[in-house]
Amino acid sequence: MRVLRVVDADTYEVEAPGGRARVRLLGADAPEQDQPFGRQAAAEVSALVLRRYVWLRVQGLDAYGRNLAAVRLRPAAFSGQATVALDSLLVVRGWAWAYSPGQAVADRAVLQQRAQDAGRGLWKCGPAAPVRPGVWRAFNRQEKSSHWGSCSW
Image (cartoon, rainbow, N blue to C red; front, side, top):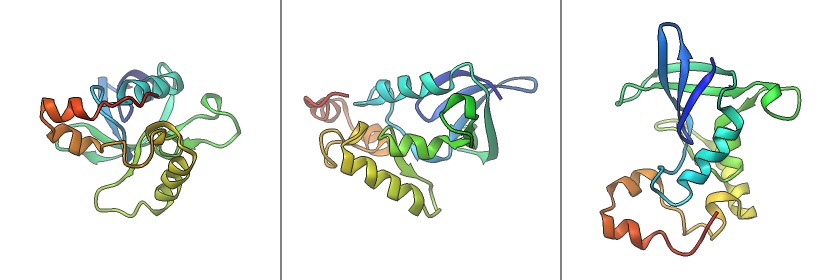
């Protein structure tokens, strides 16, 4: 499938039989667009996938009607010969948290720890700085403004 639009770092619109389909990446949870690092994470993902072909393995729908899918980048989109799991790439580069509701994320948790230790992406200002998207969405305007801080991508 070809990625037509990056909504945010973990949600994409792709070409599908009969039109467009919205896909939510499995295995990672990226910041929202209005959240610190959200636009930057989306821009980094856009550079990798926008208007490129990716492999999808759809595993159902989420509560918003999006296709839940494992996404793999073709070798031309990334260095090396093997395909690359996009969720793992986002996590190790610090663009997202390891996330899989109800499933073990041990492999991605190790990648997340590497990103934290190296201070990459979300972890640039230390492990206490980033706020998970689910928490961010629950914040009111005042709480959100207090979390912007001075840390930048």
